[in-house]
Image (cartoon, rainbow, N blue to C red):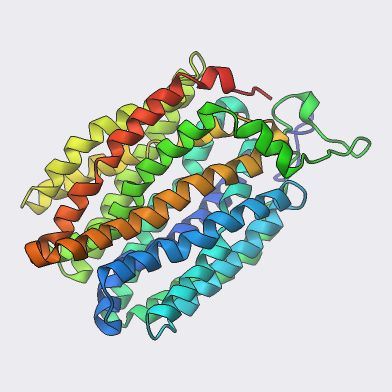
Length: 436
């Protein structure tokens, strides 16, 4: 009989199936709060804009640059620490910090106070993702990693949907400030529960006996310079990172600004937008992530290129569907048409994250993930959220309330660039792949 937290007798490094899925659920739950706290500003920005007198450009800076500056840069030294210390402690402290700063957003009185609070949210979330990628990779064998990372990434659509739904409903019935207090407070309560349940597994324990560390022969973590020298010369790393970043410019930007499009161009209320867009995020996001992970694990066994080709094809299919969705006047058709590109646009997460885990040995995975996130988030979040707000303000004198529609049109071409870069990455993956 398997006991949660214990390992099987056949492989001392392998946890029981029941416990590994419990850990995956807890990691996905923490990631849900990560995105709930990150994305809630997207639905709250219209009432915030009215009360604090902000522009779309300022809102884009708060949602993107304020968050991404510390989120992207601090993640690298945190990942270095995570390769030497307890990853579960790091995720626990990070969860508590970003949740507390989310509560602080509810105390904002103007642009700079909200900007600084968002800076704190990014600082806290810097410790959440890269250590979690490493934990998932040490709880699941290589043949299951893309699917496991896709399930972990369910936190993105679930967290985004909950942030949009609860944020909008609370703001409409009470105030946007209370919405920040409620969602941030829930994360603070979750942090100690997470630490009690999730334990650090053996690093590299499922990648072969040579990766297993024992008390008699303690593992020596590689230096940051060693990781850089191993990963950065690989073309596949840069092509995957820049391809994902190009997709994220639109992915994060569209997710942040579509609620404004629904309110300004389709005439929905805040409550109607909350229900409408949260359902799109939840259903489309989960289906798309699972599809991407399942396809990559199935075809990647025979051909490593599948880990990059799968999302490249998804982006090409999503682009015309997105333009069709933007131009329908029917709410039913808008829902169905937005559902498909929303799913296809996040199908890259499982495959690309799975491939990134195999560009370096197990002992280097956390720092490798942080370097990937540095590129992806500095471009995707900081540029994506800002550029649509900037374009909306720039186009407002000509297009008025429809300026957000045309701003979103301009940015969707980044998906073409993402598809090209990922196709190029598919041609390099086999050569740069590390098995153990």
